[in-house]
Amino acid sequence: MKLSIDPADLKEAVRFAQTAIAARPTSPIMSAVYLEARSDQLQASGSDYLRFSRVSVSADIEQEGCALLYAQMLGQVVNKFKSKKSVIVRVESDRAYLSQGSMKFEMPIMPADEYPKNLNGNPEEIGSIDGSDFSTLIHALEGCASTDEALPVLKSIHLELGERIDGMATDRYKIGTDYTDWEPSAEMKVAVTVSTDWLKTISKTIAGHTTLQISMDDGEASRIGVTSGAYTSSISLLSGDYPKVRALFTNASTDTHTIDRKELIAAVDAVSVMAERNTPVRLTAKDSMIMLDAGGSDGTSTVAVETDSYEEFILAVNPSFFLTVLRSIDTDQVKLSPAGPKPLTIEPGDGSSRYLLMPIRLPNQ
Image (cartoon, rainbow, N blue to C red; front, top):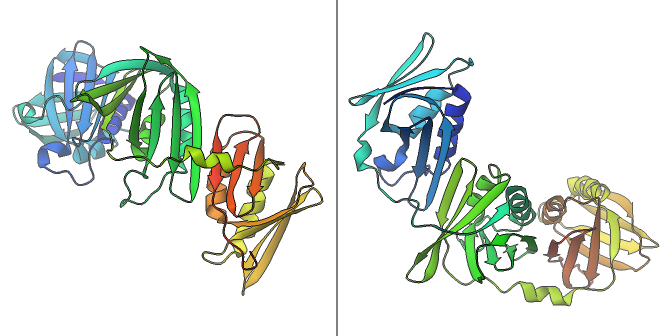
């Protein structure tokens, strides 16, 4: 195998392939990036069996072939190519040679024929979506998913694929739901639970026309895949029932306060400086103003923001969770609907996402 390639394209190919390689691979062979040179393309792929990533980039192919290179070593090498001159990649026998001008590297390779086949499963296209719409859906929900490794189902986003794509995420303290339109290939009703980390990773690379694929195993969806331009990625689905969180939104209050989102973020961020560990921020609404205060034995802080409602309420929330939800919204205004001891409903001024945030009980409640 021999080729010349733009260094930026080579770096991107290696970077994306590495997104599916585990930090601690189960075997040496799975710590590698698989390179395949065909026609005028260099294809790079990586996998940890659960995840799979592949990308194609343009290259001047002098001799077609494939090679299996240690991902960590290859990543370090390609990042040393600082100029814009083409990089020459050559594979002979059991060695790989990479050079750019006078800078040359030689590294060992692994047997390419020992790399597992069909790591992407048997995907079937089920529909298409604008990549930016799918990324927006993921961004709206990712902050509500759990980060607890012991709760893999909650450390995910649940997607329901039908006439539209409905998504939801929860860590038990906050809940997010949203939806987006897409173009399904056929009438369907498929529910999948997908790793939030994987969805966040692919959301950074998808744009424009994007296709979704599902792999079936004994009549059940077992894997989901995404292809956007030169990028393809897939992951095994999580098993287990997802909590029925949508019904909780029926308890929402009809008393709504509309507030400038950036002002509210700044206010919560400011008062939380004086909040001690596990200390909530209190919100007190009166006379079309919401007073936020927090503090402990070392000091206190207060900030007021305007609201369009004269309805009064008092509640307390975890400031970190509150900020996460507010930053998941991208509209100028945000709507708060308090419901006493029941979850606080948070919605964008104009949009499809909805959130619930569990309040913290105050001493006199």
